[in-house]
Structure formats: C-alpha cells, structure tokens
Amino acid sequence: MLIQNTSSVTQAPTPAGHASNGGPGSVAVHVQEARAEVKPAVAQQPSPAQLESEVGKINSALQRSNRNLELSISVDESTKKQVIKLTDKETGDTLMQYPSDTVLAIARSIDDFQHGQLLKQQA
Image (cartoon, rainbow, N blue to C red; front, side, top):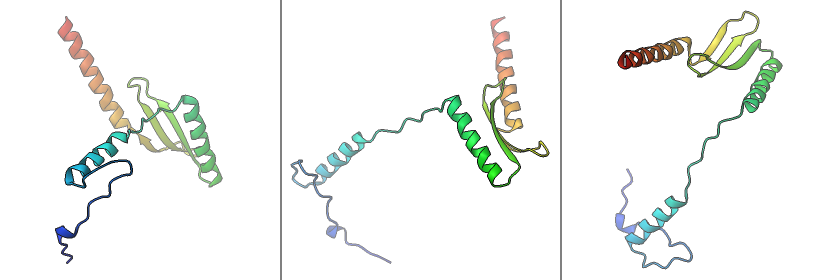
C-alpha cells in the first residue's frame, strides 16, 4: 500500500508569460484558461455521395476477402431513418440490420399513435 504525504506534493508550474504568486488560486485560474481553449468537435454528416463511396469500398473489401456479403444503406420510407443491412448475396438472407425491423415497427406505431391523437384533439 502506497501512503503519500500531501505536504510533499508540488504545485503545477506557472505557464510562461503569467505572473503568479504560486498559490492554489493561481492553479485554478490556469485550469479554467485551459478549459476555455478546448472546443468540442462538430460532427459533420457525410453527403450521400460520400456514403455511397464508402459503402462501395467496404463491399470491395468483402469481395476481396472471399466473403459473399453485401453492405447496403437505405432510408426507411415511413420513419425516414437510415437502415444499414449486411446481407448474404447467395441466399439473400439479412445477417445484420440496424435498426432492426422490430425497432422500425415500434417507431411506425409511435408515429401512427401520435398522429391519431393529434387528429382526435383537433376535431
């Protein structure tokens, strides 16, 4: 078990160009300054052409590895959600799908319920 004396802990050095008396308050100011400089990354949605290109690359890699698989990305008409499928080209079976048919059915049911409730409330 490691026991450390807290009085022997040294403070973080003051960055160049900042005058400080070295007290605990100055360390907090430097931490706040560092946090202010960090900007969150903004996620950009790929264009349809970029998606198609990447899916093509994945399908080429699957062919080169002698896999009889195909990746496809489509949009469900009723929910407007993207659907990603991995299918066996030989049998046509869907091996993996996100979101699943069950989740899409639930989303459709919720949408139908909400539209039905709105129509009843307006009438």
